[in-house]
Each structure stands twice: as structure tokens, then as C-alpha cells.
Length: 468
Image (cartoon, rainbow, N blue to C red; front, side):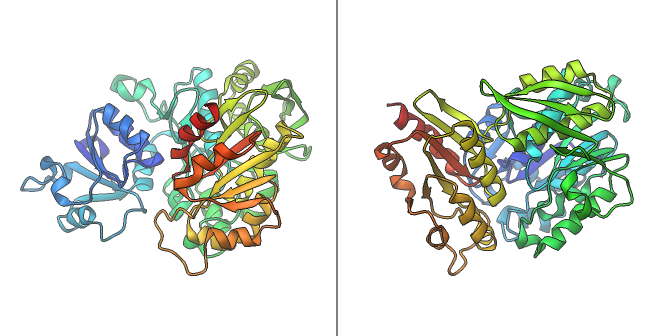
């Protein structure tokens, strides 16, 4: 299927962060773009404002007329769906029965990148921040990349960066197109990619509803690593978990055996200052405003890519200092001497541990209150003990009910089950309807909202309550 011949693209699940980037891409390419999503959000509002037709009720009567006109123009119409859409979804059934070209989001991303010079960032944690930083460095170097990101980058306020070459056919050649992609391991999606350069940041167990066990997670990352055409960059601690004949380039924090590593790490005026040792030189006194050692580590991965592309130290230094991060990744909403409110996408025990530890490091001696909304019954079940351990790092924990996403409830799996496993005594469960008022009653010093469900919809109401 040739994407150049497609004139219309319809998305089932258009509001997802990865799907919306593709929708924006095809819209910018002049294709007719429309779609369905289950829920109206700020992101779908933005897509509608950009001229994309979206509806929120699953019914074939809502499919745009131009897609239902007989005879069906199936050769020039592409239907893109996310695995979160069930196979009995009425619109999916309609397109399937009538012979339309139906592709998963990952397949389409693979088609877009197959003829470009692609840089992919994979890993169970850290890939959104790392890929966004890589894109920022490349833009700062004047390399004019496109980027498909898994979050809204603060520097550009979007999840899609478009190269000027994509809009000018006279400038386009396969060798000249540079694309940065976040390589998603869910549903083995990243196996549609064959990047020139790839980073793998972590291979912790996750998505066990798909993989079954940690061994199959590592096996899938190994398959991805084997598809890398040129340079494979691995965090030093996971080298033994990735079985590949290609000799990897390694990175780390405080590990001199790695090819790239950070050393002399310190916090100065709210910024991390550190040295990055490369195979050829040492970049002294690098500055980055993002909190947490995990972000120092992410920055070393991004710098490794930049160095392998021969980008100068001066450009790297300026890009690192000017990088503002990604929305919902340690995202400040209130930051005063008396009160701090941070929102974070953390939904895995390791991510919770990193976010909470970062807050404790940045604000020693302050009471940290965390609101956590577990995401998926299966993930809560599979990592219950680890979730409890990470949440015990909080001084005060408020649990919301589990956000089901694509799942049905699992007997015995609940937020109460998670609460019972925690050792902390300062813990409670709060219903959505009571959350904002409950926060208003608390003596808050540092507040963190965490989770991948709809907890982000409470951020502004909580901010308003705390600011009142």
C-alpha cells in the first residue's frame, strides 16, 4: 500500500497520544482526516480546531458520508486503529466487512519511517523524555527532523514535529528525511520499525497482559534490537538482557565502564549540573532543569545519539539547558516557597519510585502527599507488591479507584487490595467526586498527582482549589 496514493485517513481511537500525532501528520500532508474516539479531551479539542472531524459515539451513522459512498473507494482510503478498540466496535466491523485497508497505528508508523533515516527510542520507561530531548537537540542543530512523540513536548507544545522537507517534495529524498520516533513496546508495536539508530532505556516487566512474563518482554526487545540497521545504544545495566550480535554503545550514570556516562552530579539552584564523559572528550558542567537522576540518565542517552551524529558540544550544551521537558512528566503546576504541585504520568512501580524519589531529592524535609490512580486491573494485580513499596515512599498517600481503560474488572483486584499491602499508616482511598474537596482540607506542602488514566482531568480543579 502506497501512502502517497491515499487521499483520506480515518482513525478509530484518534484521541490517543500516538494516534493524534499520526492524524496531525496526515492532516499536514493534505489528506482528508477524520475519526472517532470514546471521550472528548483537550487533545481532541485541539485536533478539531485544526480542522479534523471527530465524533464520540460508536455508530456507523456517524462515519462521514464520503467513507460510505458506494462503490467504496477502498484503494485510496486508510483506516487506522488502536489495539484499545474492541473487535466488535460497530465502525471497525463496518470497515472490515467492506474491505477497507485497516492498519494498526504501529504499522502505519513503520510505513512512514521505512524510507527515512530513523532514530528510535524504546524502553519501558524514559522513552518519551529521551525522544523529545533527542528531537530538541536535532532541531537546535538545524537538522530539521520530524518527530512522533508519546507526549506533548513543552518546548514546542505538540506531540508531532514536522520537517520542512515533508511539505516540499523538491527537498525530499529518502536519505535527507530524519525522523525521531518513540518506539512503543505495547502489543509488540515497535517490531514494525527498522531504525538506523536506536536507544533502549529499560526492559522492566510491563504489559504482562500481552507478554505473560518478563522473559517474553526481554525477548521482544531483543527482536527489536536485531532490526536496528546501524547503531544500537543500550543502558549499561541491560546489556546482558538484550541478545544481539551487534556490539552496543553503552551509557550510564556514575559507571566508568560505559561508553557514555554522567559523573560529578550535583544540584545547583534547582538545576542538575554534571559532567558527561564521551569516548572522545568530557563535557564539563552540563546543566539540565529536569529533576531526578533518571532524567540525567535519559540525557546521557540523548547526548550519545547526538555525538554519534557528530553534533557539536556547544549545540548539545545549549539544547540540554533549554529543554523544558514533557507535559505530565514531573510537570509543575504550582511552584512557590510554601506550596508545590506536580503532575506526573507515572503508572508503573519503577516510574512511581523515580518520580517520588525525585521530589524527595528536590525538596528534602518537606511532606510529600501523593494521589495515585492505578491504571489497569491486570497491571495492578501483576505488580501489587511493587506498587505498595513505591507508594510507601510517600509521607501521605491518597489512592483513587483503578482506571480500567480497555479492561473489565478482575475479582479481588482493587485499590483497597493495594492499600492493604502498603506498610504506611498515612493512607486512604478517595472517590473522584470527593477528591478536590478532600485536598482542600489537607495541609499540603508538596502534592503529586500520578497515573495514566483520567487523573489529569483533576489537575486544574485541584490547582484552583489550592490557589484559592
